[in-house]
Every structure is written in structure tokens, then in C-alpha cells.
Image (cartoon, rainbow over all chains, first blue to last red; front, side, top):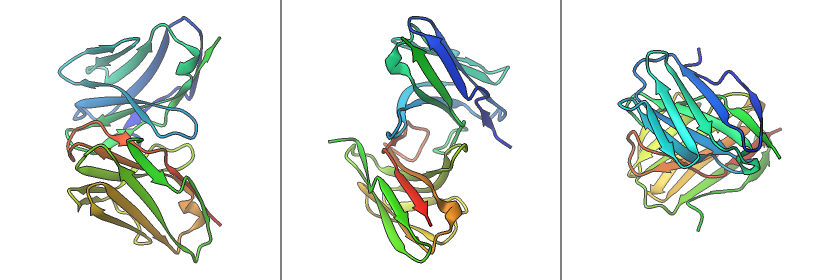
Length: 111
Length: 113
């Protein structure tokens, strides 16, 4: 059973609008979360993280929100740019180096 | 110099071949990881090394044999693989083998015929 789920395999957004990528998890022991971005033929690149002691973390155009009661996190990209088109993975850890990854959401930002 | 470098980028091998994947990190990290990503599946952790000592072997078949000669280099030796082993193999490193950001290489796309 997948402990980390990204239920939307793909998302299309107009340039300049907000992109919202979602991630749900089942293990209440998860306390640290990462988002990665992956371009074709490249490895995943770290984007932003959040600890369970926070409910929001912001870095430029990227903001991650954590709702612990709902076991849900989301990545907001505002404004979206064509260069943001990539596959986005969320990953969760229960306090160790063992991250459980989602299957990814492919974002396409339309110019 | 790119942070984490993997070679080769692509590899095709027969089931009776022996080959090795190489990973090198230039970040001064102490922990290195091998992951497998099969089509439509999430990344699966295979092995973890901390200061050249293996700290995790995630029920990986013995036809995969890791080696970490120093904290900058990691190898994955392959022998008598099966077609279902075809996947993207990713190497990553982090400062320590703790809750930490992991930095990935570009991966080796392996096809087993």
C-alpha cells in the first residue's frame, strides 16, 4: 500500500496562473517532507522542504503547505512559468534517511 | 563540477553479463544512496552507505552488489540480472545519513535483454 500518494498524474496550467500540486500520506509518523522537481534526462532536483512543526514554508515563487490533521501537503507555484514544466515528486520521512516518494505529477505550463 | 555524477547514462546488458554503475559526489557528503525507479512506480531505496559503511540493504536481491570505497564514490555491481530489473537507477548523497536533503544524480537507464 502506498504511503505517499500523488493522485493527479498530470496538471496543465496557463503561464502566470497558480499551479497547485497535491500530496497525501497515510503514516502519521511522517514529520519531514520534501518536494523535488525532475526534468527529462536529469535527476530529481530538491525544491523545498517542510517540517511538521510548521504549516507553511515559502521560497520565492514556491510555497509548501502542510495540513497534518488531513495528512495532506501541497506545493503552490505562483506565478507559473513555462520553465516550471517538469515532474514534481513529494517525499516523506519519519525521522530517518528513509524517504517514501510519491509517483509524481507532471506539470505542463502553457505559454 | 556537477554535484552528483553517474556513469554510464545508459546501459544495455544481457542476462549473463556483469556490469557496474558508478556514482561520484563532489559535495563533501558522508552518506550515499542507491535508488531504483521502475516505470510508473515511486523511487525505491536499495542501499545506504554512511562513511563507507553499509547501513541499509532494503531486501535487494544478491545480483545487485554495492561497493563504497570512499565517501565520494559508490558503485553498483550487476550480474545475472533479469528483464524486470530494467529501470532507472539513481544515486543520491546527503550530508549525513539522517533526515536530510538528498541530492540526486541524473541516473543510469538500464535495459536488461
